[in-house]
Length: 446
Image 1 (cartoon, helix red, strand yellow):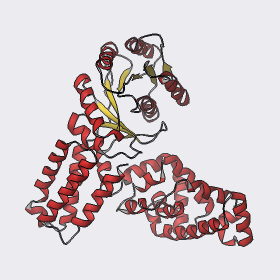
Image 2 (cartoon, rainbow, N blue to C red):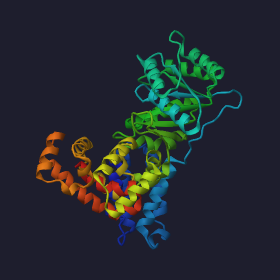
Image 3 (cartoon, rainbow, N blue to C red):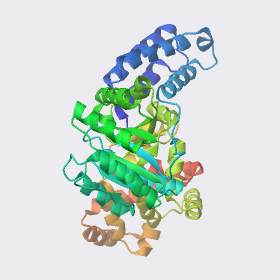
């Protein structure tokens, strides 16, 4: 996410804020380039202007220019201001004090990912806090919206309330009563969107608000629409007084404008971000982690959280030991492929590595489709060959390539890269099993 703006920030830092040559002149030049990068990322102009002025005031002070490490000091200022721009962290919900269900009203334009976000939020609240959500199909405008929500609800084991012949405000009112009667302590209203904000849409939302009395109103915004998302957020907020924003499609080519502008323009926090199409791809928004990733400093906390969710602790310790002893096998590699595929895209995980390492590896020509070919080659090996790849001679390579639908050259390349990766893992193993293996894995998918 934010790959373009992140690359520009890192380039500016390397060229202009490097140790030993920091001056007022190159700070000015660096800030001008940062300003250009932000505007190109579709960040709101006023937000950019205020952001640059704040950094300039702090960076061209006597304390910075005379500090022991002025370059790092400037980067720290930029990081802090990025964090202030997007933060603070606020993932709290307002819970109902006068009824037995908390109502969350989800609003947004058509195509923003609102219906999927409803299901994601329901799953998140169910799994993390043990709530019993009810999904409400109140989008009677978009064809198949009700069916989509029902399919999502069925896949998650979460009931969906619908009344196809009723009006959306009445559907929502009836749904709240139904949730209370059936013991559903969270009610999520999937309201209708439009291609643009209009009076009919807003009137309908006002009626829903009046009848269902939501405890939280969240706007779902498509991060890829940049400044358009911010403009629509401002209009929705003026009319409904939002409680927060959910940004979707941050796994795509998001320029960053929405995430960097929306809090400053609306005053409303980004609560969650969608990082993929699957229902488990909803994350709490942490501005400090996002700032760190934009500046190429990684996001170890998020990486560890993902690892903890998918990796067995006992197996992780065994893997770390194997890495340090260089006894890591192709069988282990296969198992880690499957774990990483559950956690997210390989490129996304690389971006979370610290110390600029992730940024360097992200520049590799990684082809994630290559994972399938690597898996096919390993599956075509015998258990003995997977544990002791050095026994694989020319005859065995021919058999493996034939069985996997690949060439002998590809088998040779995998074995060569695996040996190099195993040696690299010995050096990185102390960082922990997952982070230790990530640098080595990067070379396998080129």
